[in-house]
Length: 505
Image 1 (cartoon, one colour):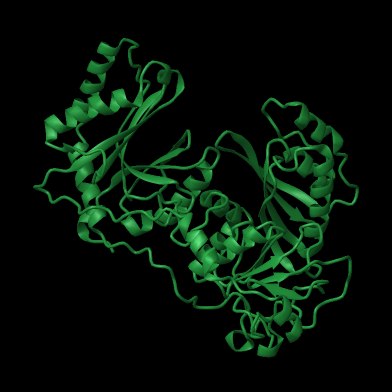
Image 2 (image 1 turned 120 degrees about the vertical axis):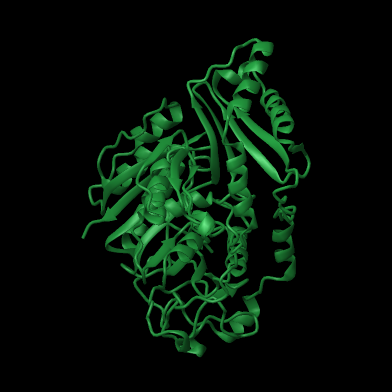
């Protein structure tokens, strides 16, 4: 909701992962109609009069801050006494504290709108199977992950025949061999009732309890202080660069907090503050902000079991050029984050996720059920080297493939990547895209396998394993893909790349 006093222009900065700044800037431009922005070191600075709901719709942002002050080229003395005086002087001279606090209070008083949609306007799992053609669960009834013909009229005849015709915990168990046979009904082959009764299971309450126990549920935020009430606050500071060798975050927090308490009458509260002031000090600048929301924007309300970072998953889906009604495949879906980001952000999709780790698929099913997306996402217990799908049935593939930690030897990579390239090349339609996240160690090997051409994308020092991986790849003469783009990003301490490919027509 937007009222008149929300129309004033406010200065913000949003944080994101390193390498994702341009994605965030493009999203801010599209959603908030902002033209003038500045990108720097995992942050995007902008000014907007948008209401809080529009601000919270940014999918590629980690945190959103009201900008209190940005001081470039600030240098703090090494001496503790001089540094303390400088910190206090800078804090006292900032004139935007009260205006920033006023805007922060306005945001906190607005009603939260993070409700999970119970139903979608149009089901994306539109299939033309009858009730009797749906996969069976333990009780011999159709599994809830597939919709009946009454729900839709679109046909998604995707599945090839499966050697293991069973459903376990609501997940299709598909071990495909090389074959051109197709299953009778769309999506899934009909299961015999006696096989379902023998082998089928359903996810019991213990699985749900295990998932919930591993999720930290945030406590309700405290009541926002009235205009005439003292605000309870604390300062969270991060020091980076050479500066952190001489000054601690506590030094900045103590001195800045003392000034704010004395000048504005705010109360320091370290355990349960109403307001948390964020400060980042580096060798090049000092940045101060107030968070628009108590939780990070990247913490999705519809994802309980976290896998790949949600901001990265959304950016990957955005690069896939997904269109309404597309069929999206993640052959190594893990906990289903990519599939959920696609289903939540694009309309009328059919999403299919596969994984050979049944435990991960249980978490994916839990996430899908929590997000009320059971009718939009189909899960398969399958191997990326032998996908149980028909030829040219998928519009795009989006996947976070192994980074080389579990497949770090040349022999392992030679088996996984070429087989994956062959299979996704088989199931993706001509002109379709594949968006793949891989490590800097494996990026050149991946590009060479997909395109059949030599690649030298990696720009950081390589170790012996990386050199061996790159040298071992000779590409393939029958490559089906063209490389459209690569995007570098850093995930914690790991160098990574998002690679975008398009299948030749």
